[in-house]
Length: 467
Image 1: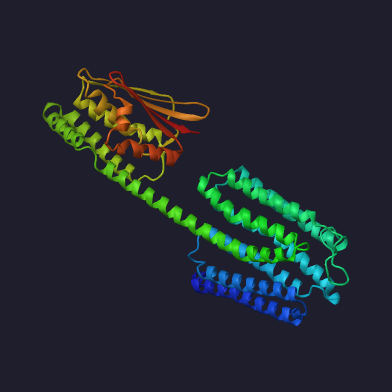
Image 2 (image 1 turned 180 degrees about the vertical axis):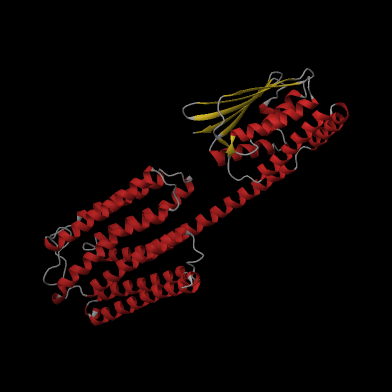
């Protein structure tokens, strides 16, 4: 058998068509059951049945649209489709159950269908959480919420089974109606427990404040109102209608809006990162011409004075260029040991130009930690160019690294001319190199870059990378 044909797009589309066709058939079955049970006997039952059927049609059309985009869909949309399937099942059984309400000969069926509807109604929290979790980073909180919601659902399933033999949630009398002698506090408590878990997971996540509020507004208010209206429907029938509309129409539309908003926001962030990466690549590819020209000039002079040293300098210069080109394409952090080797190559070439003016000291306590490529080397270059070379007597650049229990630290210090940081911040120049380096350290390794400088005394750059 040709394996490629098994997983071909055609078969995938056929499966989606099968799912959509099944939902259409079930919708027609529900309509037939409603008509067969003569819902016209009661105006309220007729009204609620019409709303249920319209909700089924709406969910079917919406699911068909999402299934048609299944191959292009991102993961959150797939879980949202699962959530819609769950809503569909709840509405399907609730519609059939409603059509038989107040029919004495159907009391046993009403109990069974109501039990199924209650279970899938509670499982909405699990499918809703699976959808929400796609926007959150995996953590101890998300794992705990998954376990607690799953445990609540399993426990509730056991309560529903118990209810078939000893009514504790609801009881359908021999007349086919709800018994007013039982108040369902268990469902309401479980609903609120799961809803609070969703809110705790959202507020304790690393989402921005606007995205937290957006998600809560899409979930908390409609779900809370649906809980209250559907569970208190015995007391106020009009609230039940609003609960159906919100649960099957407003909530899915709100979540679709959030999903679209999230994709748009991610696309904007992706474009911003691409733009910054282009700026970084341009900065790296357009290395300081004076360094290239001066290094070549030094090598040219050495060819006559010291051919062996000239050959060594040529090899070092070649390595420096190759590493710069290789590092420019690095999208992931590299080991500090690799960055340190690149720094030593650069400093060695600079010492050829300033043998009596530039001193370099290394105090390396650790190297096995990640840093963005070309994040420390530009700081050494700035120390030499803007600190030491502008001082008549020259000076010393010191590169140190050490670790604590919580982070790794790299410092690049010089005893050059220094500068006034406040004036540097307030001037009109664009400090593209520093800003890009700070951004990459923050985004790639979650670290920070701080600068301290005193005019006439020197500058210290500190990079911290959390463990």
